[in-house]
Image (tube, rainbow, N blue to C red; front, side, top):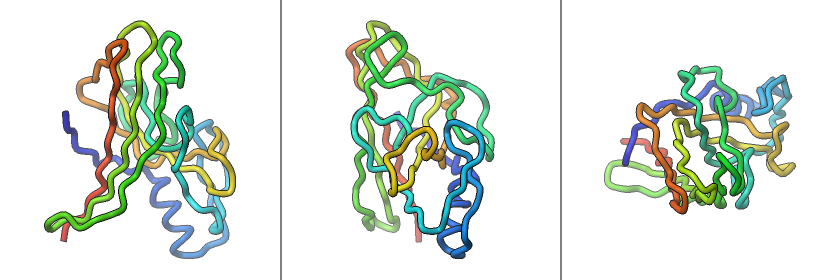
Length: 170
């Protein structure tokens, strides 16, 4: 099932701004809340391993409307096989490529349900951490958040694959 995403958050542009303008630093809100400083030498990264829940594509059960200033999913699903949990696979990327009149960059992650019951995913996001440290709740910054019009039920034993295609068109 395909859905269009137009939900880049202010933090996406703030991180781009600090690097492009080479200003010293800017306050960016980590997934855990509060205020943190992102310096112009910090490199955004989301190349995370299986089980990482602070960077890459993230999923949640929340239905709170999206806002330009969101910094976290409303109710992020934890990694694991317990009740209400999904097993986060590693984050995958394709090299940007020209596809017809478009340039596509594809981000993919899988989520395995071994919880024993169905879980409904209502929100999806993408977060980056600083390459100087492994992503944690103090370094992960949400830059995309989408709330689905209709949730996607992931039955026990099923795998959900989420793919963001970031596309520009000439």
